[in-house]
Amino acid sequence: MSIPGLLSERAIILAPRGRDSQIAMRILDEAGYLATVAHDLFELVKELSSGAGLAIIADEALRNSDIKPLLDLISRQPAWSDLPIVLMTHHGGPDHNPSARMGNLLGNVTFLERPFHPATLVSLVVTAVRGRRRQYEARARMEDLHESEGRLQNALKAGRLGSWLLEAEYLKLTCSDITKSHYGRNEQDTFNYDDWLAAVYFEDQPRMQSALQRSLDTGVDLIIEYRNVWPDGSLSWVDVRARA
Image (cartoon, rainbow, N blue to C red; front, side, top):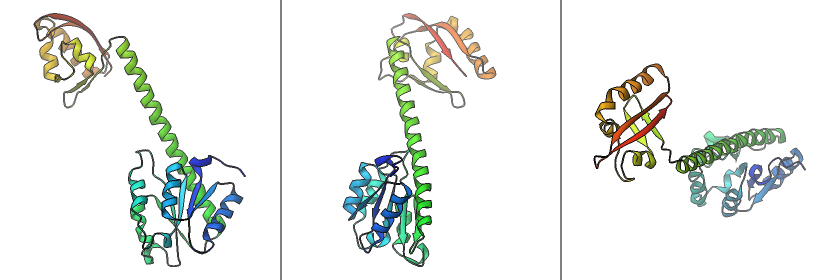
């Protein structure tokens, strides 16, 4: 058997009545997809928590059952995740089946009416796994971004380099604690746009504001050194660089 992604791409099947679970598992096995059968909702949630590409659920498994653990699992998904669910319904489809209408609670649901052709199930699984892979790729990008941000912050701390962001439209300034320290402020001190301008030494004000305005107007990098006045009255030089 070809197993594309082991646990992360397997199908968890919950169909406690009849032979639906065995039929679905055999179809997926022949198509090269790993599948695991859960015997109740508790086991389904447990298996999904261990990793899965999708869930295949018979609608009767949701009737008169406490589905809160499943809904809780779905609601606790991280931002990158949207677990695909194939909900097997009886003849009549979701518009005529009360259990199938619960699909809007389950999120990313596709309905599969029984009896179904094997190729239909395989097609749904292929689509679900492909979508799940894109979600895993998004997770990897988010993790890479987080790691890159961590490395950047470590480098900034090692070099005593502060970081800051000015939202020009709203004149909203956000800066790191190290940047605050360059202006004589503590971590808990507020330091907004007005505080920043007020801290610039009066003789350097025209030059600094001219450079800032030119950067905002033309998009050129802001590169400037100027003096700032600390709360205790002392003067300190800062080297400020930014990209518009």
